[in-house]
Length: 306
Ligand SMILES: O=C(O)c1cc(C(=O)O)oc(=O)c1
Image 1 (tube, rainbow, N blue to C red):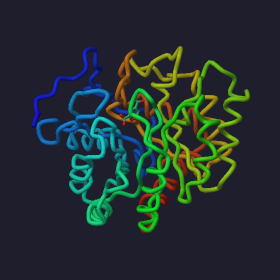
Image 2 (image 1 turned 90 degrees about the vertical axis):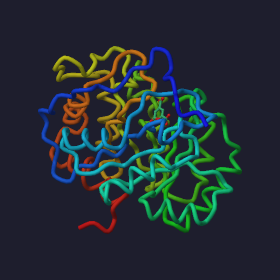
Image 3 (image 1 turned 180 degrees about the horizontal axis):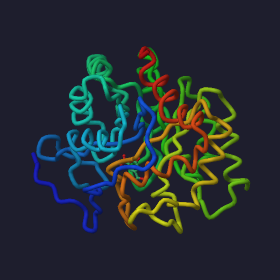
Image 4 (image 1 turned 120 degrees about the vertical axis):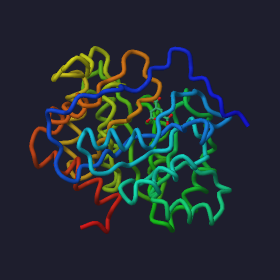
């Protein structure tokens, strides 16, 4: 088995020495979207992966959590690990209850694996429709997965790009468990936040009260920044109106996370401390920020916490 992996040429490694955020996160804040990569020598990347990243271990993730001032993490299975959830489960177990997870499973996953994942802290599965990241799975396979995970009380996280929503909408609405949308459905932020494409996305969120939305990844969505680097306190201004619209209309079902270690960025690697400083721009009041960072993710991932 290969354990010696070479990251993609031009791969941008995560930012090694993030600044301490000026914005002080509320107590109990959850980084509700982040990943671990390998390390490849211990947890090999999947043969079917579309990219080979740099390593980003659980210890490095937990160090970032502590530096930024988060209490908890939600770790999302990255596509470079396919449906091999061992690195994820290892990180969840090591977190001692301070991390929950979102896994990738195939319809033939055993009951025992599902039980073990649940016991480790997994509370959802991820369906990915971004063509550069995965080969499309047949929709029937996904519905078969839903049937397997529904009894565990899990939800489905969906990652897709805005132009694909019209084709996916009815399928999503047929999924009989809560849905969580990654990265705001990837809007084109050069378009009008009040225009038809983003309105179609908001309308999808309105279709059911159990559709949640991650208002994440300004560093991925931005077109003209400025980037969260060199102390910039007004980063990613072009993304702000989109995220703010979602936060204000759906304050009780928005989530936020760093997306560390930021796979596949090609332009720049953000300083994660400055990414945290982006939060007051999209959630302008302490009440909105408390819902976004504490109440909502705690309700979804730690419903029994007091
Ligand atoms: O846009 C991406 O490249 C990306 C990739 C992955 C993954 O590979 O799982 O996860 C993300 O949240 C975003």
